[in-house]
Image (tube, rainbow, N blue to C red; front, side, top):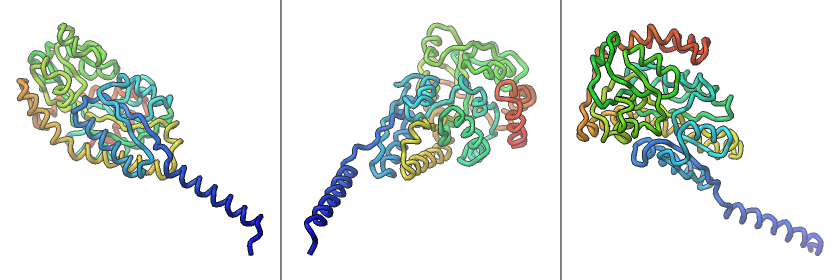
Length: 337
């Protein structure tokens, strides 16, 4: 027979086991804040929320994602700063160049000719993906992938003079972001420019402080400015892609299985965004037309003059913004694409 001492030891061991599994079963899920800048009903926000649901499912409910779209936690520069600190866990945002100028590489003008090029360049594991992962890692951020929205064009309140000829003045004042490369790029294409924060852009249109804006796809022009714009030019100047990122501080709190769940959900979101981008881009251009804007679509051949001038005059100067070595790698990797 079992001695009373051994019997008590077994009882104690069983008690601890029950306590452990009970606490594990009823442990509160880890809730992560994921910030975005897209409008609530925009496809980018819908995809972000789907990613959150997938993370919860793949982690067996151990992780819940609370999404904050439409800049509810600040603009993308502030969000990224908070992610580096770990005060915001995740983001699906444009990446500012404030902390690392080389992040501009994502917005390199005329980097892709069409959606087939974009699919190869922005997929997980590509040269661009791996390069961005290294840049984010230096700032305490883990890069999970791209959310592809389409190609960036120009929205205006008045017609642009000869938009397909980069050698003439466009006779329009175009809003650009604080990114230094934007000024060089748009002036090379014949535009006068003014720097205005995105948060002030709508009121700037109303006040007549600018006559157009560069920095968004058809979706952004529709969701944010359709009632103040008159024209949209699908010039495919750059690939419109946001980044899916998570704070390294948050990442280290996750178990290996939880990390796999996050990676899988982010990979699925990235692949879906690339696959759906062309259709979404065209859908939004149709929405712009229904909203009363005149939309200009162009063939790759019609866009070639702009692309060639930018590649010839702007790409060689990109080293001063993203670093000479990285600029050379970019030209080597994509100049013939």
